[in-house]
Amino acid sequence: MFSGWPPPILDPAGPYASAISTLSWILFAMAALVLAVVLAALYVALFGRLELQRKLGGKRVIWFGGIAFPLVVLTGLLIYGLSLTRHLTDPITGDELRVRITGEMWWWRVAYLDNEGREVVHDANELHIPAGRPIVLELQSADVIHSFWVPRLSGKLDMVPGRRNLMRIQADRPGVFGGQCAEYCGGPHALMGFTVIAHEPGAFQRLMQSRLNRRRAPAPPAAVAGAQLFEAAGCAACHRIAGTRANGLAGPDLTHVGSRRTLGAGILPNNRGTMMGWIGNSQAIKPNNRMPPYTLLSSDQLTALATYLEAQK
Amino acid sequence: MIEAKRRGGSAWVRGEGQAGIIRCDRLALVRTELPGDPRHLFMLAATVGVSFQLPLEIPRVEAGEARRAGAVAASVESMTGEAGIVGPRFGAAQRNEAAVRGESVDRYGFGVDAGSEKGRQSDQREIAHRFATLSGRRLFRAAATVPLLMAAACKAPPEPHPSIALADPANGKAVIERVGCGSCHDIPGIDWPKGTMGPSLDGLARRGLVAGRLPNRPDVLAFYVRDAPALVPDSAMPAMPITGTEARDVAAYLYGQEGR
Image (cartoon, rainbow over all chains, first blue to last red; front, top):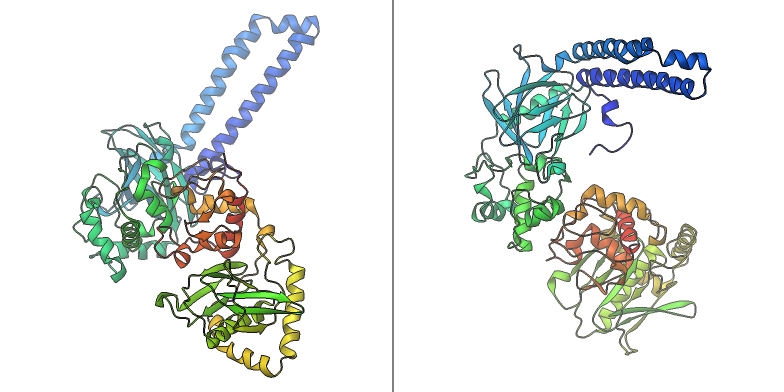
């Protein structure tokens, strides 16, 4: 997810992540400086002249180098760091785009909010944003503590049960950015990924408008068998597809699953093969996730389900 | 069945038998009108360097059909300059022979010079030469292949494929990771995921059959990993979003895994 060079923490793609990268570089520099001073002192202690060694062992050095210097430097860094990143958690001031993201074991529930804070579009494991604009995320948890982290766009903030934590993200340019749960949350925590896709503002508007206007689930002729099977096989008990009778809320919303880049919460590419493999036995891919294996389905049935889900754009 | 055999300066095509493999190193659409399962009246295209099996049940080969078979072979051969038609169960019958010029019949994918760039260029020169020197009966036969060639032209032009011996296993591994083959297959060298819906691909080079019915050959495997339903329509394995070159890289990677 975060492979490649430079590491995403040092490759910011927006103002909030830039502040964190700047802070990281300053910390690296300070650490390097302190290391150099310590090594120099060590050299003197081992090989230096007796006179210098005696000074190094004196109380003044301990008071200055051991207490005063760290106190001043660390306090300064703390204040600087907090001021640099204070805008990450700015409250909602009015017209920001708001998205509620709820951590679940082991996926992300996504709801786009209107100005009054009502949920208007539902999705899962993927967030579409307009480039060049701050977005306020309302981070919540449905079970245990998770942590939302998209390193190229912002900081890392815990999702605590019973709390609503606000964090801002922004991408300066369109692109795709990987995320990951950053707080151990049990079982397949390491396989709890996330994707943020930043669009040109116009393209984002069109995407949201098409999702707002969606009244009926697309069901091309090839997908009819899959649509029936989706209800008959029990998928609808846990998954919702807007515009159909499928209204389960235990698992990820599949209304737009056909347009998602990933499956299984940011861990697999989305194509027919991975879709069938996931439905058939997701336990082999993401052990202990809450979807049972469906090895009772035939290849025809798996193909029908995949065809239907691919059509849910 | 159809057989091409080198004899002196030319090759022979025979009609007899039950199943066989057409190998062509260029995209070719092969249409047969042999009696048998109507589903197989139209054979689809094989991409470069890919053989595919003719799932035909041919109870009897008429003289005219042998000629048609010859036309198929001629079209394939004239497009590639090197394609041979080979059946695993050649009949003993010596009748219904139709002479078709051909260069070789046994250039399977792992051949040292099979599909090499140098060989291909000389083959192309050879084709040009042959079309320039067509005469009489051969011209008639070439004319019979025109519909086949036109049908072949409907498809996008083939990609320039290296032979599987020149394929890049490292890229094959990257492709496997990119498209998530592991969602269904346990693949050696791929740590995660190790899906269970499909068979383990461990030690694939030692397997007898691909998908339980196809000959385990590099070119067949390369075709299969890209477009399984075209070869085995009722397979659960879907067509995968990879190019022909990537498919050959994937096949090369899978063959390179020794088995545990």
